[in-house]
Length: 444
Image 1 (tube, rainbow, N blue to C red):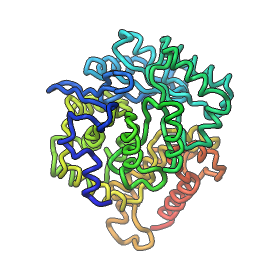
Image 2 (image 1 turned 30 degrees about the vertical axis):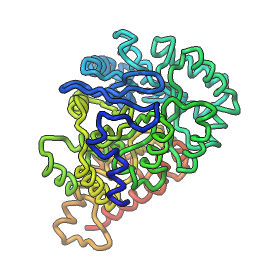
Image 3 (image 1 turned 60 degrees about the vertical axis):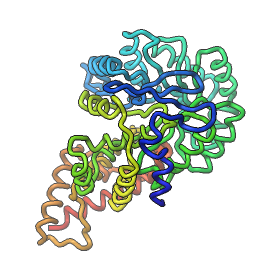
């Protein structure tokens, strides 16, 4: 991409901050005070939302008395309390997050605060059963989980184009139902989250005149801005939404953590420029610099994640043109590293054969970033670097995963592929990693 276009499309960096997102009458506006959370105003509803939103897909899990993985409710309560205290008022969930536990845990924590002090966003995640009856039950269960009689932001979950949209929401009569719910005020803002190609995004935009999307949630970060290869590029989607005056909610600003744990050589360049800022802060500031962004979601598992992100948004300091240029160069460098574009969403789980797919990919990516994945064709056992990398990979692999959950147990059933929003060819990647592990073991 031409760097001039990269900078221009970000709203001219700091110069755009504090202005309307676009020239039409319906545009996101900014409210920022020194030391306080930055807010954006939704032109469709007048909601004043925190620019940093809380994604609830990554709450901390613990074992209960029966050995089952459950959400640590005390941790959720503590984090929600701190978030609201700091000015965060947008909380995003789904009926399928964390084995179906996220909505209820989040609802329990939020219900301890006044209902008008936060916005609830959740989704119609009718992936496996999209009958009208089941879809309505899912919608009503969300209201029950959040102990409320209305939802502030309701999304059609993971739409990829017209075919999926019609199958899950139109042909079964759910769009008519949801439109009536919006008219009655039980849904205050109706939109969708998108995972798909540019052609599918264009198909969904054609429905704007009929359904009036109040907001749209897209995957957007400085890597996917122009370098996305499988899906619609973030820049294209952002600009199309801005043209139509549709506010943008961002998911995956850190690309599943990949933009917080970058390769060592790239991390060094970040730290040389801003030693007092975290690497993750660059990604969040990139999102916030775009003025039509209403909310940037982050799944903050631990208190330290929350506190670091608050530094980026209290208030937001937009990126300059030169900093945007620097980020584009970093994104280009990252594409030279053979990482797997897994965001750790766990939609592929559970695997019917017990394989821990997200952990395998996370371990592999971490080793790539740390330089512990080597080119076996050109390496020799006598090389000191090779011996070090080989030992580091094999030991850490066994520590990260029980042997029964490692990549060699993949049978190629492809059950996981239909659930992956990144459209990763998961069996192929697992087999590639397994071959690499076996070759390392054979090389002495």
